[in-house]
Image 1: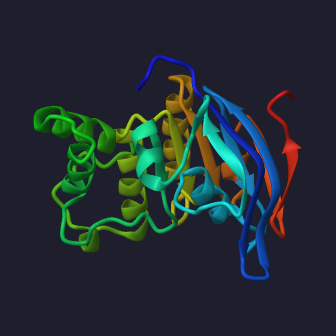
Image 2: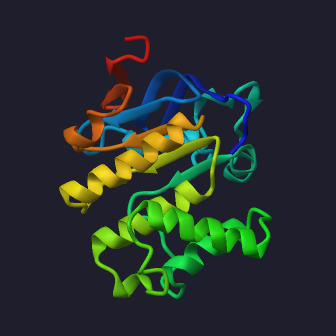
Length: 223
């Protein structure tokens, strides 16, 4: 992970799909070391916000920047160190848990030996050190979710964006995942998780609620 503090900023962010407004005039400033929960009902814009911050959705208006750099498209965002875990995890079904992690790291230019070591460490962080050689179909839904979280953690990204990372997890594994995300934030990452689960939102430093695409702070970073 980079040692330089990062600052994720969205300004007047808007996303429209024809006549439907998915996000409206969202402003965010999230410094390094912060963990922010994005909450709200289904269809409120939580996933759209994460995808816009990750460069995977092009805003209709407004800007997203990491420090002074425009995030741009998903390829540029990835190069800037923005990692995205989409809802459902998006694991490759023909690869084992370890191979899903290693392939992602190799695509970032990491040497194979380093990628294998980092993959093993990330799987251990989410309690799956014994399941690395399993295909996704051989894992439970909760285990697949933890592999997807491990893929994101292994990136050591400057920004980690996770859509429903505690979905399908029991209480113990939810706390394990949240603890791992806290470690990443404490190491200097910006961590943003979209969640419908109040118990997953509670440990975050701040909570941003979306309602029909509009954002308001339930708990702000400045307290």
